[in-house]
Image (cartoon, helix red, strand yellow):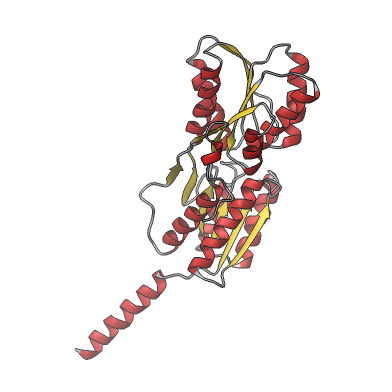
Length: 308
């Protein structure tokens, strides 16, 4: 009888040990570490990982929106023996092959900011809502009438969702005329500058521009100033430190639907740790709400760099 009890105790202890997996190493592959959004995300993930294990190692790399590069990065994470991967997928569908390879090795894979087919869970901003509130601001400011542009970006799920949210709002306003909605400004300041220069040359009247992120908004404002065009309402998505300054300064940027990359990454790590220990989230898609930051409320906005 004692032998049976002892055997049962050993079995129970080994089961608990197998389930309670330590977090020792995380791999993070993000769109571009030249974007402060992703830098803030790394900081958030690192801080949360250190809460679980002060000696946890965080390997953060920039995919630079190159799918082949991201494939290689995932393979490198597997070879390095990471416990968890946070991935900002370059291609939501094509990345599944790499994700499956990682999962076969017992690695938890959490998609952050954009969805990734096959990931154990996804944590992202409610990007449809973000696009809606940024473009509703434009409709309201224009009184429901005007010529507008949707400045598109890299075709990851977050961008697609923002543009779809914006389109749905404009579609409900018959007086809104969308001049262009398919130009990819690459998610960067230079891209926003170049695309906006083309639009300003092509269109004599532009009342407002929605850009898919803050760097593009700043580039768009710069292009308008260079070509001496004014009275253009510019809105975007991110709530980045640069846009806080733009909203307080002499720019045409009037609003940005905020994200919280720090909290997003922290939630990603939390979810990943639970998955490692056999606890799946109730919902595989976790959406974080967006709020609109404007010239009127930017003073009260707690942005990316606020104390945590």
